Length: 122
DNA sequence: CTTCTGACGAAAT
DNA sequence: CATTTCGCCAGAA
Image (tube, rainbow, N blue to C red; front, side, top):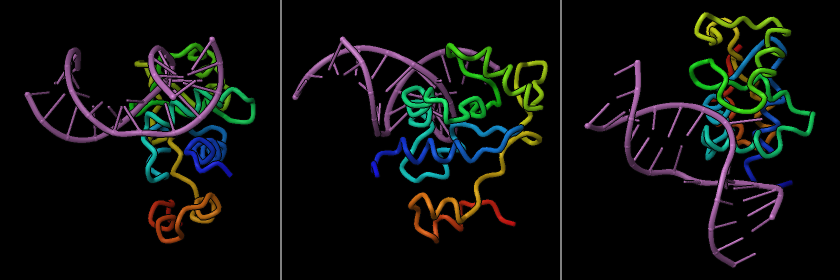
């Protein structure tokens, strides 16, 4: 196992269900020591392998950041049922991923206590 | 080994 | 609302 952040980040992104989105900062929030910036780095570096639903990661405003695949990202999301508002932003109240369950976080190597605190209840 | 660069976000001003 | 500052991984040349 790499002790790097990238593996954990990509693993978490893979947990985002279709039709939902998560922000870079949100993903970072589940991984202590990881910042929103690093999530972007992780996807830019390894998100093109084909086994990561990178299109489900948007910025904090619910919009798509300026990168080469931006247009395709939006197209893919709309295909999954995600709606974009007039400002080109997604309503995270409606399509935002609530988060992983505690078991998934523990499986990724987080301390059970931390996992329980970060995981979405219920 | 060094240098470069790439998908962000919160807080202060 | 806009602009600025700081945080700091990993792969390629």
